Image (cartoon, rainbow, N blue to C red):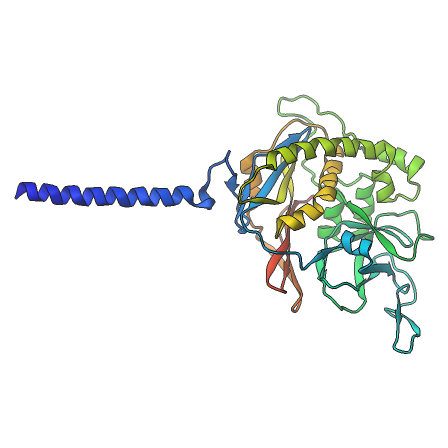
Length: 392
């Protein structure tokens, strides 16, 4: 009898051991519980994201956001691509001419003159257009940046487009149409556009007079005084006086005095970034979390690797410009810091929707703001996810 009980006990024990082993194996292969050092650690953005170890250079750290999800975003076009092909036209108010059925030129929309904070955009192409806050367009009476993330559908009527000026000293000349500058305003400017929506603050940030975060440290953890920024307000004043008299964002940050530092820095970061992300299996980079010194301050993430790759060259240079405008500390943010930054923001909530086209959401809590651009067609997906640590 005792032998029979021992056999039963042994059988039950072995079954429990096999069950426990199976559970542990399932947990080990779950992509949401992978350990750091391999394909990354799980992020908290709710998109199946993971983070890789940071790519660091000087005071800039970039954490690649990777995903196993690969939705098709080829149905959409970007601003630079559409302007270059002629599928999209951007003009000053009153300068867009539409032909009526009788062949008579008609100005659309019916407003008499140009306005600083509004342009006209027409999508003549066969794909919906993605616009991101902070994208620079050049021409017209002065260069502008897009004021808000949105989608412009196929066949939409001429759109009054909200923008901000980034060329304070000009209101004449230029082409009637705008061209893509292939630039994204750096975070200090972009935050004033996307979150603050304040023209005076945008102008101040272009001149380096409005840091994105008020918590920038000028001393390292060891107590040593950090090096002064490569791009300071004083150096920008000098560039404006010599090479960018109209305070054009494009002319300032592509000038010989500033542009060479930006390109050299960007090349160093891109080389490291390519090496760190080469050879991913089943996963691709869809975004980044960005830290300046020891402060995680920014994140751009996209629905697909294809979209990320389209925006990456100008996003990288925008982060580099921001790094060069900050004190050159050698402190580095940790992987946990970056992971925490991807937690969804909670707090004050705003939403705008164009039925059947897109939904725009903003969540703000303290110094953190989060913006999501969701396409509603051809199927719902979050095309762009932005999070920023801002000053006010």
